[in-house]
Length: 136
Image (cartoon, rainbow, N blue to C red; front, side, top):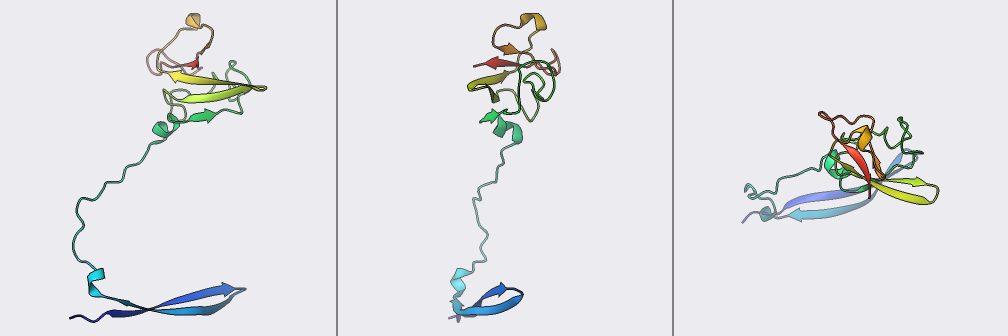
């Protein structure tokens, strides 16, 4: 029979550069606690990508002050179709106390196809980045 391994846990605090021992706790660990067996059926770690995360919740665009005009403060000036705003993402804009939600759809629309509730991003392209914002 194997004897338990003795250990001492020391509890210390440091205040104004002075370290003091506040307590000592004696521990005895029996051999069966330590196992040399290899674990089996480990669950693999998975991570959520930025686009997957951003397409899963509403993004508040409080800095957007208008819908069109291009630039950082407009809805059409946002980096649509990127990791920041992937297809399927929903953003929230507000005009005074009126909130609007927009979903980014992965379809190209021409400037002549604009209808009520559709905003074409300035970086939208028929081949490379076919996206537009749809009011929902």
